[in-house]
Image (cartoon, rainbow, N blue to C red):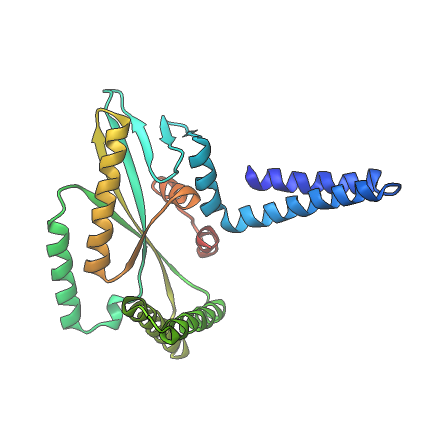
Length: 266
C-alpha cells in the first residue's frame, strides 16, 4: 500500500507537470517535487519497507486484522489470535543465519555440536519450532553472490580492525563470515552444488489476556535467541513486519521453486 501510494504520487506529479507546467514555472517546480518525492518514497518503501512500515504502524497504533481471527499489533513483531475458549495465543518468529554446514565439520565436532544443542534446548520450558527450507541454487549466479558477500565481509572486518577501540566480538563475527564465504567459494570451484538454506524459529505463548500472551511470547523469544545463538553458533534476529508475515505464510504454504524462495528473502 505504501509503495502504491508513493507511486501514485509520482504519477500525479508527472501529470501535473505536463498539464500545468508549460505556462508556469511554479507549477513545474511543484509537480517535479511531488514526482520526485513519490519516486523516492516508492524506492524507499520497496527497498526498506520491512523496517519503515513497522515503525509507522507502531507510532500510528495501527492494528492489522487478518482472515482466521489473527491480529498483528502496531509494532508488527508478534501475531495474536483469540481462540473460541477465550484464551489468547501469541507467536514470535526469529530468523536464523547459518554460517557453517554439518558437512564442513569432522564427525567428532558434529557429535559434540549435537550434544551441546540438546543440553541447551533441554533447559527450555516451552515448545519451540525450528524450520528449515532447502533448495539447490544456480551455480553461476551463486558464485557472483558469494564473491560480493565475501568482499562486503572483508570490508567490514578491515574497517573494524582499523578502529582504535575495535570490538573483539564484532571482529570474531566478521572473521567467521569471511571464512564462511571463502569455504563456500572453494566448494563451488571444486564443483560441489550449493544448497540454499532458509531457517527460522517460532515460539508461542498463551494467556487469558492479549497483553499477557504477547509479553510471554516476547520473553520466550528473547530466551530462545540466546539459546540458539550459543548452541548453534548462528546469528539470530527478531523478525518483524514483512519478514514475520512471510514466515507466518510459510507455515501454511511455502515457495515451490528456488527462484521464488530467493525473491522472497531478498
